[in-house]
Amino acid sequence: MRKRFDTKFNRYVYEIFTGEWHTTTEQNIVLQTLLGSCVSVCMRDRVSKVSGINHFMLPSTRQLEDIIHNEDARYGIHAMEIMINNMMKLGAHRGGLEAKVFGGGKVVKGSLNNVAESNVEFVLTFLNMENIPIVASDLGGKGGRKIYFLPDSFTVYLKRIEISEQIKDTVAEEKRLLKKMKSSAEKESELTLFE
Image (cartoon, rainbow, N blue to C red; front, side):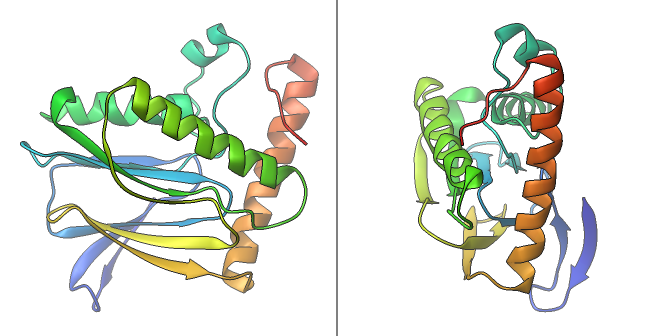
């Protein structure tokens, strides 16, 4: 995570990257991320105003025991659980949680498109099963997204990103991580990839 002051927002901006998450009680900040095929969930508790954001690359590892023992927030199942649990530690209550969901763009041909579809399906299923209402979403489609989440108002600004140098860097990082995870999976049979 990178923190910087942004004069346009007149607030500190916390930028998170693939496999990261952040929970906070701070209100006068911006939480930002850049998405390609990955998905990000912006969440808050309506009462306590505790907020969180994550950025995950794949729904889960293949085997349940790996999910339970894997603390890698690149996997959606862990990214969601760790974010929710940390929000609760800060005073959030499960019954008050609501979400805004973004990402899953088909930014390139090949395996990342299937990953994008799997991420979208996972996050919608997970939030439905957990009875966490989705109050806004922008999922799928082509291209990337840059999101700016303001916890104090639960506002999310979205900027669509066509394939450009900025999104190419994100896609390259997603491909690098996917290749690394696929290599690890082939060695340990822990991961199912859809190509």
